[in-house]
Image (cartoon, rainbow, N blue to C red; front, side, top):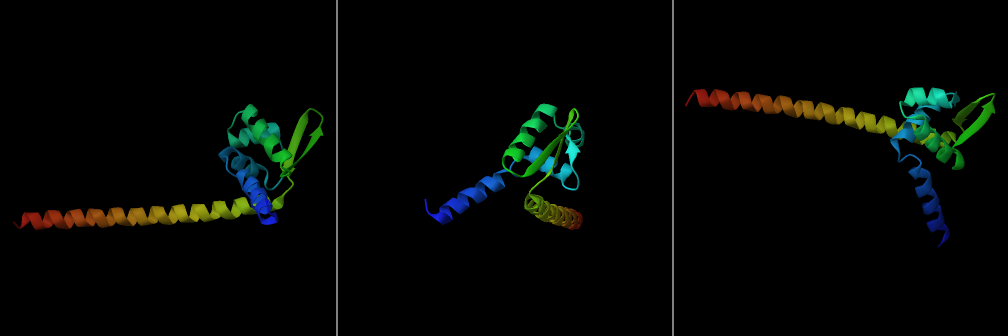
Length: 125
């Protein structure tokens, strides 16, 4: 495999970290400050087992820091580029979804208007 191929493989693995909705929720939960596993579980609504599995995946990939304090383990973002990519894509998708919603809403109004006009024409027959 050439060096460009190796880069593409690494980039693909990096983006795969964002391919799981629970991981996105986790990153969203800790993007501003580190939190304990129990806080992350509460904020994401996922089970502790599921959150722990995804935290471990993100940690092994180098995306997160972790530290132990007493009986608690805290996780924080180590790779701020990952959260920036996530934030950028989430903002883009949210805006696109909102725009599509507005377009569908406009199409529904147009369709309703069309139905009203069709009914009016039928009254004159």
